[in-house]
Structures are given as C-alpha cells and as structure tokens.
Length: 314
Ligand code: BDR
Ligand code: CA
Image 1 (cartoon, rainbow, N blue to C red):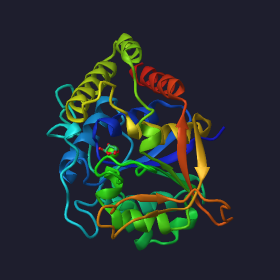
Image 2 (spheres, protein in one colour; image 1 turned 30 degrees about the vertical axis):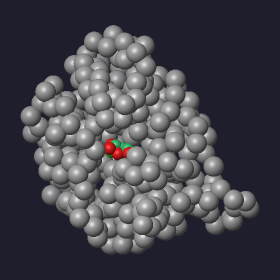
Image 3 (cartoon, protein in one colour; image 1 turned 180 degrees about the horizontal axis):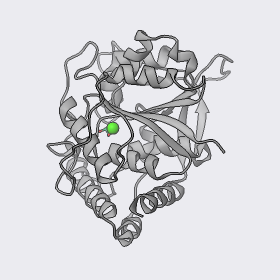
Image 4 (cartoon, rainbow, N blue to C red; image 1 turned 90 degrees about the vertical axis):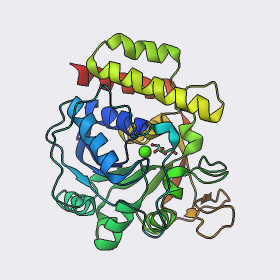
C-alpha cells in the first residue's frame, strides 16, 4: 500500500506537536514538509517549537519552512493562553539545530505539491490558514493537484475563541474564506469532533509506561496543557488534543464519521465573524466539496497515537 503523502502546516502548540508525532511514527504516512504560520504564538516561536519537537525525535530529513507572520488582512491576535508563554513546554526539548528551509512556507508548499504526481499530496493545516490561502493565490494550479485538504479548524454550532468561532479560523478569517471557497475536497475536523479527542488517566498511564524520552515529554505536555485548560475553562476533563484528529483522519478515515455539507466563512458578522457556517439542509448538490467530521472513535485515536510513540521511541 502506498503511503499517504502529507504536508503539515502548523503553529505548535501542544496539540500541533502531538499531531507531528502521530504522523512521524505512523507507517502509512510520508511527511513531506512541515510549514509554520503565526497563530498560537509568533512565527519565530512556533518555528522554533517545530524544529525542537522534530529534533527531539531525530526527524532530520524533513524540510521545515517558516511562513506568514501575520494574517492576510487583520492584525494578529494573541494565541490561546492554554499554550503557555512560549507555545509549548520547552523544558524537555533540545535547543534546536535543525535548519530552516530557505524558502517561504508558501513556496515550499507549492514546490512540494508540484514535485509529486497529481492528487497524491494531502494538505493538513492545523493552524491558521494564511499560508494555505496564499499558496492557492500564488499558484492556483495547486488546487487541482492536491488530493485533499484535511484541516483542524472551525466547527458547527460551537466556538472557542467566540461563541461561534474557532481559533484557527478566527485568527485569519479571510484566509479561511479563500481556502473554503476553492474547489479542492475539504474535510473540516472541527471543534465538535475535537472535543471528543480527550485522553483519560488510563491513557496517560499507558503513554507513561512507554518510558522513553519522547513519552516523558508527551505526558508532561498533555498534563500541562490539561492543567491550563482546566484553570481557564473550569472543566474537570482532560484537554482535547484537537490537531491529532486531522492526522488521524488521513491515516484512517474510518476513525470518524463525516457529513457532506457546504461550509463557508462569516466575514462580516457583528457577533459571528470567523464562524464556519455549515449548511446541513438537504439536498446536497453534487458539486459540494466540503464535509464536516462529526463522530470520533476516541479509543482508536489513542491506540494509533500510542503506536506512533512506540515506533518513534525505538
Ligand atoms: C486549535 O487552536 C489551537 O490553539 C490548537 O493548536 C488547535 O489547532 C483549536 O481551536
Ligand atoms: Ca494548532
């Protein structure tokens, strides 16, 4: 079976780091490139974090490129406080020496898509959509070349940055508008799905039992992430590890249920800017290219993740 070729565009972020580990440890994923955009923290911080987590697991041969330092139109907002001052806990991470690709992230994305056969590369954005939107504008031909876009962002009937808007969309709604209005197939792995992606104490214990440098980092990260989440949201649950879900879908789409529905981005609402307006009314037109993920097999997600950590820890 040929591997799924993916590009991760991210802003680590605890859950971004976990998504990178899931991808790198899974035998069915070929991670072609990792690109960054300002989001959870500044571009410099998230690029540093990306290099550090890749270095932790010795992923030396995958290009990493920095992209946009601000949204297309709006001014940058501060990232979610759940991701600490530097975006991720760095106490167990190496000081990264991995080089940053000379190209802008947008160019690395375009070059990577074009250097592979049509419809073989999947884009996996797990941060704001600034780089992806610019890539689609700079080289519109990539829209027809990409296999699909599987993104963590948005959600229907719920928000986290506002009552109805999710962080990755709200941080650059114009970019999200561009991405959702292109014709490539899009799977929106949004909040409703991501809220099901929580570890429990038993899962944390299983990860701890792997007893590797990586598993120690993962346990500490997930625990810290949950501690700030509980403090801020007043929940007693573990924090949802949103970004993991987008990679999991690429590995095995049967891990979630999806519903085909047109999705568009609200840009002008007094209260609803950044909302991913999802239209579940029937009938769905044949040209509909978007689907929303609805239901997750959470035990399978964590089995998959633990398998990856085991592979990487060897
Ligand atoms: C998304 O926002 C970020 O803080 C997380 O990394 C995730 O991508 C969840 O709303
Ligand atoms: Ca993210």
